[in-house]
Image 1 (cartoon, rainbow, N blue to C red):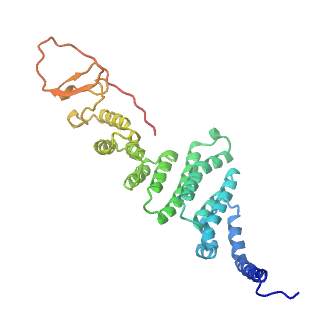
Image 2 (cartoon, rainbow, N blue to C red):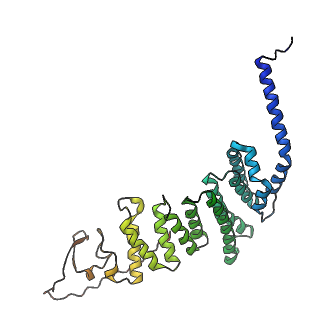
Image 3 (cartoon, rainbow, N blue to C red):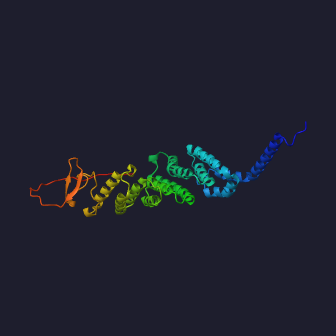
Length: 319
């Protein structure tokens, strides 16, 4: 029986053959590029240069060929990076993390989690390769962390080219500098960048002041927190006003700030928490709270009494 060229079967079959042939020819043409690219990715050189991989890959060519499929491919490559991460394979983990963000730079998830793997996890792998943690000299451990933090920062620098106004990137930089290499100057610099952008979390302001203090700028930290006190939302528990006030009082004591320049007494502060005497006669309620109806000091006809109050505090805030 002759085949009807107008039948559904014939028309569908012809389209399938044409599509298959076109895909086959595209795959054949891209085969040399694929072999070269994945040959670079699969290399086990300890200091794999991501720029070489990107050059071999040809991001523009791949995106042009993949079109809308690049998100799917980026997800696949990221899963592959996690496979090597589970095996503590540093070269392939780093290479595939970079390749993921090169294929699809839009998801912030790839950038942030990739930087965390590089800065937090890989240093531990490298140190363990040298033996037990306590057997590796401290200076060598610090050098490994510094190297990996530098690599993570390069990744986040690339991310900022695609997301220049996203506060999560300087915030992530600040966390890494603060936690992993104790570089409080750079941590403060990036916390400041983060809090100057929209949607910065409340804690970023507090840790910014901590970083300033640890970097040797306690006066700057105090001035920032004091100004912050007057502008923050005291009804929002996330702002943690009690912690901010505590840090202000700690810095005032350490800096020996003149009482006239200190933050005025706040509701809920007790006599043990704050020396109110320089501000005049203040009445302490039975519950120990400050009465702010402060009257001018008047001579007390009663015999003077010696009072020995210990106002010392030992606060340790390590965020």
